[in-house]
Image 1 (cartoon, one colour):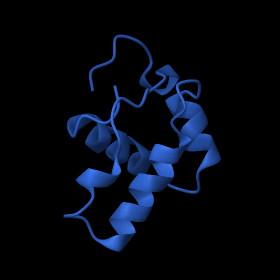
Image 2 (cartoon, helix red, strand yellow):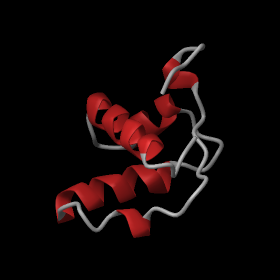
Image 3 (cartoon, rainbow, N blue to C red):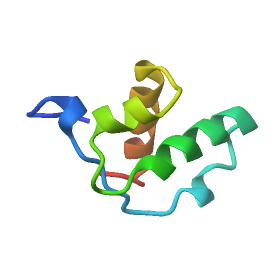
Length: 74
């Protein structure tokens, strides 16, 4: 994702369902993806999502990048 503003202030939005795209991932990866995906509500910033999860900032960034790359968030 390219940001013209502070990336942590960006508000991601869901544009497609996640489930059909999880088949190739292991159970731990699916759990992490579902956890981050569930926090996306079109109102929370990335910074707020990071603050509410017990995951590293880097992990949340990686998950959001992956979710964007598979076309489920923008």
